[in-house]
Image (cartoon, rainbow, N blue to C red):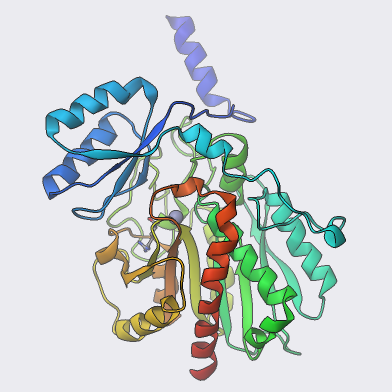
Length: 416
Ligand code: ARG
Ligand code: ZN
């Protein structure tokens, strides 16, 4: 048993070079709608007790909690649910099949660009393709596009922001910040944000969106986590930094920003998916991003961050049900933006009221430094596919959202 102990210690203290890929074969996703607060609490305890992966927390009653159910626990959990008399539906019957089918196999790489970059919006792409596309744009449109390296991730990947500006002196226009990929598994986010980049830079008809506005766009804020979802675990959410628990790496970047850090909806446990980290901005990714935004905080008038899933437009604050003094302005603009959507229905409202309280989010922090308009968008869908949204929906999601950017531009252009 000493040998066993030593082996365990050795295994835990030597960081895996590349963790083997997790298979979700036979795993199901259950969608459960607690009807009372007691049921909601019961489900929280159950998922903790069985160590279940929570894909979505229920917001109060009658909303959906999505849980990953391993085949080994299915029978037990069914009994638990039957005994508690809580109904559920199987949202995803085999998670690995959903993962395997997420990318289309007839991805079209435009012929004319085949040598220049490998980006498309009919497939989800590795970081190298997204970054390759960003540098392609910077070299192809040097008067419009600048690739900015704002820092380095925990695993030493570059953190890139793309500035799009047709101004002769970039930095003087009011600016819109957009980021994606804070959470690793939310693949629709980097896909949609990079679609915005493509539309703004490469579609001449959209040049009106560049008039008197500079764009700062960061498609993948958490590149380590993003890559990890391709090679090891499709459902990884956090960063990949080492924590006090060698078998539980990673901090939730959206609990790591420095406003009301460590409050409601956060965890001190490194094994939790909502681990807040050891201090605000403990993560190189959130630190570099916040420092960069701070340096531009008088220019940036609007902060947009893209997550999935649920189809929500979330307005600060999210640390608790607290409404900023100018909440009505923020609500009016969000409603105007959302009214442009024709395909996907979004719910609009205060983040903590609509979803759940969660402190340390990037949106709250952006609001706290004086960026008047700050929103979190939870993109498609509402749970049928969840994080494994098929690649065939990238374009529909992007196309449905894009007209809302015009609403945001109008607001920024008129208030300055
Ligand atoms: N789904 C996001 C999260 O849990 C929502 C964040 C909303 N913003 C907030 N400050 N709580 O991270
Ligand atoms: Zn998220």
